[in-house]
Image (cartoon, rainbow, N blue to C red; front, top):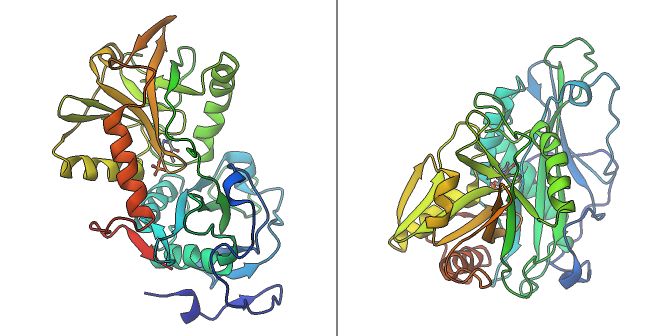
Length: 361
Ligand SMILES: *Cc1c(COP(=O)(O)O)cnc(C)c1O
């Protein structure tokens, strides 16, 4: 496989070759990072023209010069990924399951008539963005991590409704804080009743900006009502659970791990990883249509995704009624907590990586 050092690197900005650095050298306030953009050393950028991707460039400028006719701006020809790199207990920096993100980005690209980013290029780009920004990778022990945001957009001047003739692939990386410094916190979710996130045969299953645009208003309204996350039901019947705005729905019921089956849910890599851990812990994994009127029978419910892994949900507001989940809605659901801890330990190399999920950069 290609690694950044195997590849001729076009130094667009004539940056001085990076001096050897170690995670955490940027000396930021690692325990108060939050989840926000902050400047780093730079980004990686590739351009697709006439059927080919170029070799990629490293640029210190975090802005793009984009033609006003770009399809990403007008027609939403845009998709992205989200994944994390961690400095482990052995001080090695590794990315969590990047091949899964490469595959998912390929699916998104295919659905939006965009050229696929080959897996080797995706891995190279992510590793490159991490290596050049090593000083901004939070040190082991801080609980913080380095969030990678690969983005693929139609960047050609194509004002007619058609796929672009030029594409730009960038990888932006930022250090992000440990969301649960004080331990997991259960939240109350609200069912979104007046909007749909995605149509059954629409773009719900791919990671495209359009789905996030559709969720902004419902999410903002939920927040204003005091609910940090909102849950979507299926657009067709409004009776089946889909997912939260930006994270999957998972539940434990007795010895069974449940997650909805639907064509309009984003296939979460966190969900897939938690399923593997749950299966090893003796749970039966069932992916099937889940009805909203079943939630009262679940022992534990959570939202899951890369950013925070698990958000325990112990109350769900539906049609004005509050449904409590499990016997102690004010406490952290213990089995979800255990799954969360296991995944964290693997990411920080505090447990053996028995599933080969960690990719060294
Ligand atoms: C990104 C995303 C998720 C979480 O996926 P992960 O791979 O676990 O980060 C869930 N739902 C939606 C709608 C998403 O966009």
